Length: 71
Image (cartoon, rainbow, N blue to C red; front, side, top):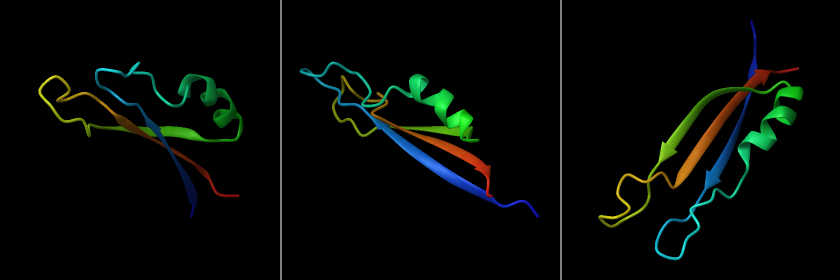
């Protein structure tokens, strides 16, 4: 039976009046190295923790979930 290991990378960004709305990690630049290590992206889960009518529904955090065969 195959056994898997998992990696979760959390990306966050602040939103609001004084924010630049940028993510704290540049995931596209991380993906090639993760692929070389055998990691496969299986899901991205978006979450919103912002309050206020101007921010409702804004994605403030993403969890990038990867898997690879356990060696």
